[in-house]
Amino acid sequence: MPSQPETPVPPPVAQVEFKAILLLVLMTALVCAFALYVMYARGVFEATQRLVLVSDDSEGVIVGMDLTFSGFPIGRVQRIELSKDGKARILIDVPLKDANWLRSSSVFTMERGLVGETRIRAFSGVLTDPPLAAGAERAVLRGDVSAEIPLLVSSAHALLDNLGNMTTAQSSLNTSLANVQTLTKGLNGRYGLMGGALGSDENARKLITALDSVNALLAKADQRVFGKRGVMEDAQATVVQLNAMLGDARDTLKKVDAVLVEAQAVGANARSATTDLGQLRIEVDASLRKVNRLVDEINRKWPFAHDTELKLP
Image (cartoon, rainbow, N blue to C red):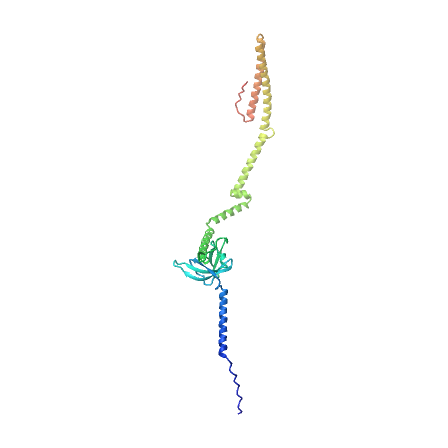
C-alpha cells in the first residue's frame, strides 16, 4: 500500500503563558471595575447619615430594602438588630443629599399588605422644621393589613348575626313591614287614607255618616236661627218694636217731668195739676204694659234672661 502523507504540525504559539496571564489580569480588572461601578451605583462611596427605626416586629424587612419619601428612595436598610428590650432595630443609611427631606417632625411607617413586599415610608409634613439629627432613633408605625383580618371577621360575624335577628319572623323590622303592608292595604281601600287611618272601611263609613248627620243638624239650626222667619229675624223685629215702645215711654216720662215742674211752680192750681198727673199716670201704665208684653214675646222666641222686672228712672 502506498504511504499517506504526514499532517503538518503547527508551530507553537509564542509567549502563551504571558498571554494567559494578561487575559486573567484583564478579566480580574473587568470584574473589579464592574464591582466598583455597582458599589458606586448603590451609593457605597456616598456620604450618609445613620437613621435607626425601632419596631415591635421586623417581619418582612430585609437588608437592602429602600426607605421611600413621596415614592422616591432616599435610604437603604443596612442591618437589622434585636435590642435588649426585645424590639427590632432597623439601621438605615440615608445619603446626605437626601437627608434634607427628613425633619424632626417626620413620621415613619412600615406597611405590610396581603400581596407584595413590606414598605418603609417617611412623611414630613412641615419641611421648615429642624433637620433630623444623624443617628436619631424614631419609632416606626406599623400598618399591617393581615393583622386587621381577625377584627374584620369578628365584625362581619356580628353584622351577620344582627342581620339574622332583623330578618326573623318575630323581629321588629318584620312587624313594622307588616304594619306598613296593612296600612297600604287600607289606603287602597274604598275610603283611602281615612280607612287606613281608622283601621277599616267600616270605621271610615261610620265617621262619614256621623259627619253627614252633623252637617244636616247644622244646616237645620242655621235655617231655624238665620233663615227666613227664623229666630234671628223675629228677634230683630221684636227689638225694633221694643225700641219704639221705649221711645214712647221716654216721651211719657218727659211729660211727667214737665208736669212735676209745673206742679212745683204753681201751688195754687193743685187740683188741675193732680188731674194732669192722673192722666199721665194712665199713659205711663199703658206704655209699661206694652213693654211687658214685648219682653214676654222676646223671652218666648229667644233664650234671653227671664228677669222681666223693669226699673224706672
